[in-house]
Length: 315
Image 1 (tube, rainbow, N blue to C red):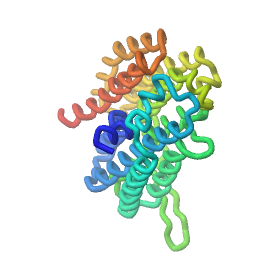
Image 2 (cartoon, rainbow, N blue to C red):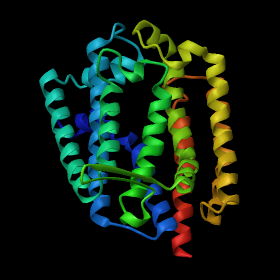
Image 3 (cartoon, rainbow, N blue to C red):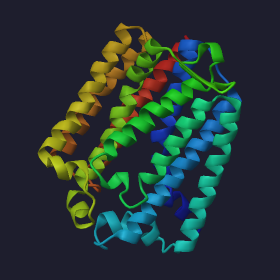
């Protein structure tokens, strides 16, 4: 396997979907709690990027092994295992290396932080694997959008904030001491974190939703019973459009409650390109022609979200 085929197998260009929650969550934590730990950040970055790459590789491998329709844009061009003629042994070996690296860095991060990070990390790891692998992968069910959005949008954001905080400031404390399990939670700050992560949750969910809308016919033939197949294309498109408008409503709440900096007003600049992309996708839903519109929307919204924090720290 050469570098080009590896980068295609792990879809390196899509890793921004996990990096932006990490970066925004980190800056949110610094803004809100004035705390940052460089080593913990590096460990989380390594664990996150490697488990994300492993999940993508597993998804491509599983699709390759189970495809019933072996032609069309989504299979013979989009699937790198087929496109680059990768052997099963090579792909499996690559997946194992990626998983081991993610686990090692994750365990070290747990040893430096708390039991809660181990539990959330373990749950996220399990969901990441079962998302693409197993008797009934999550990606082949109506829950793909929910799991991808919540685990990538909320949990990454939450961990990115939590790992920098001293014990006295942690949003959630889970301590095992002298056979006692102590659980403490700052409800208000947890609600604030959830509100602050909604733009990430919904824009990531919409990437999966757009993907599944574009693949309805292929998914039917390959036994992928996704959300658009259950509720139909018309309702799926209404949901797709509505989630973006909820994001902008959420930003109004975030700014009004002073949860995020006033600089976050720049996010409303993205309304114009986001609305344009919504119309393009509503008119035609294909991987080749319009799927990238949801990626562009994700980058517009969350790129400006990230920039708003950077502007806050500069000025």
